[in-house]
Amino acid sequence: MAEKDNIVLIGMPGAGKSTLGIVLAKILNYDFIDADLVIQNSCDKTLQKLIDACGPEGFIQVENEILRELNASKSIIATGGSAVYSDEAMKHLAEIGTIVYLKITYDQLVSRLSDLQERGVVLKGGIGMSLRELYDERLPLYEQYAEVTVDVNDLSITAAARKVADALKQA
Image 1 (cartoon, one colour):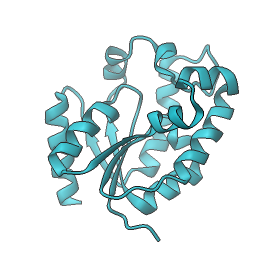
Image 2 (cartoon, rainbow, N blue to C red; image 1 turned 90 degrees about the horizontal axis):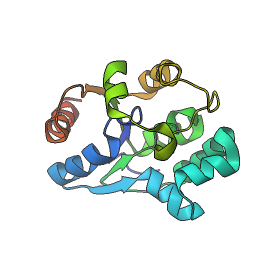
Image 3 (tube, rainbow, N blue to C red; image 1 turned 30 degrees about the horizontal axis):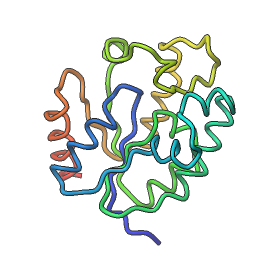
Image 4 (cartoon, one colour; image 1 turned 90 degrees about the vertical axis):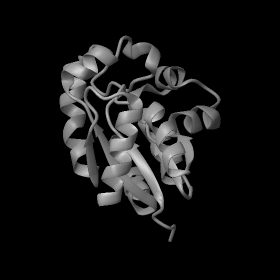
């Protein structure tokens, strides 16, 4: 059994998982793992090319396989926003770390995300899926898996990272 010494960041695309994760890793003296980059490296394709090639469901399967095998220690793991679609992956991540949900409002999401297509965002409902539908679909999943929820609305990356570090001390 792996030691539960990692911190796993979940949340909507644009919530700051990757950027905040790097700052948090510096604050806590942890390593940083960007799960999206791990997926890209192991498949030798960008996320968007993977989604185009396999479709949303196929991508979720690939993401699940890679995340459920992920081994890390004293690391901040920034997951892709779609990681919560993979129950196996989330169970594994919960075994090796504390799951922290970076919560943003729908309005913040809209202001932070310009182009979903370029970001490699998994739209389970297909290309016509609206941002509102994506938000409404994922919100209950983030809440279900979260062990610690941190509201990062209107915070700079550094302030948000400090808030997460403080929340972890109290957890």
